[in-house]
Amino acid sequence: MSEIVFSGVRRMFRRNGEEVAALDGIDLTVGEREFVAIVGPSGCGKTTCLRMVAGLEFPSAGEVKVGGAIVRAPGPERAVVFQQFALFPWKTVAENIEFGLKSTGVAGDRRRQTISRFVELMGLQGYENAFPHQLSGGMQQRVAIARAYALDPAVLLMDEPFGALDAQTRTVMQEELVRLARRNPRTVLFITHAVEEAVYLADRVVVMTRRPGRIREIVDVGSVRRAENWDRLERIEEVMDLASFVHLRTHIWKLLREQQQPNEH
Image (cartoon, one colour):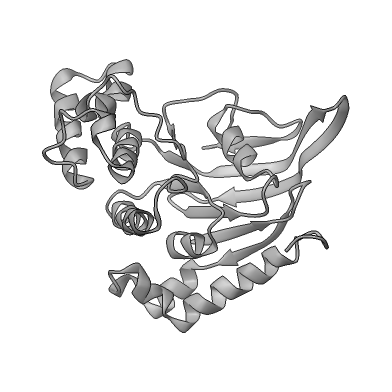
């Protein structure tokens, strides 16, 4: 079971000696093997939501459950991919992918098979013995995603994973993630500032308000994708040209613009 459930989640923190609400009343269910993206203004608590699922932060009120159990700490069934690649610079590509497998006691033969599988799946053939500094940003993020998937997690948590990449590399990585998600479906919670990215990748897009973060609307993308068979199109620009994609993107942008302060431009 990999369902994620937020129930009445509130998150407070202290700033200049005062209690400030980061999140207020979050109720959200991410179904098993569903891909959900969260978008919203800076500081609305998107990353805080992800960190609570990861077991790195905890609600001030309410609860977060994964697979029916309250999240109380990090666990191997939940893998996280951050914006900064977070690779071990002194380890090779293969060693970085292997790290989680080794630390959880996976046998050597199985580790080698898993490394080989994800090296091929992520297009890293020939770079197994390269170190992170010898790779482009896009390739480093491929390694980070391969390392997360290699653990065979039930839940994949991705916090702006392509935010540090240039536009062209980001597009390639988005297409790669779609292909990977089709082959190896997981429950995914994906945080992004990019509306187009959210609509392209997710089954549903959660639009949050500015702080204190609340859910403004949940936009169903998956039913539109299935109805118009977006999957027949291999390249992201073909999908983005569709009238249905443009409509969803525009709708979400309007929801986000409503959250702007009067003096914002």
